[in-house]
Image 1: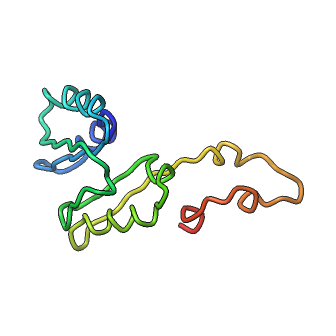
Image 2 (image 1 turned 135 degrees about the vertical axis):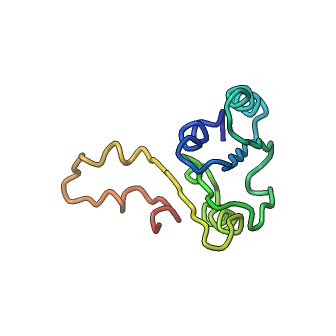
Length: 125
């Protein structure tokens, strides 16, 4: 969640009546998010806590994360929690930039970059 950037971008694109729920472990960023959304016409909820511990079964139509899984010690477990959090037929969207993408045009003669830098579970996604 942070200060709710994805919500600010996505809420105008979603159907009227949509609700944005942001989860973050930092109260400071959540306070900023609440302040940013305070005067906007969107329904919001901001939860403070560890996303790996919050239980949200069959709650959402869409679960989105940005630059989040790459920080997880077990991204597969977090993906399973995201799957668990969506309603039947729901969608999961993950934007996971990695510094290696900045080097995508670099060439190391005779070397395969994916062999040099293992991305764990993200490598297989």
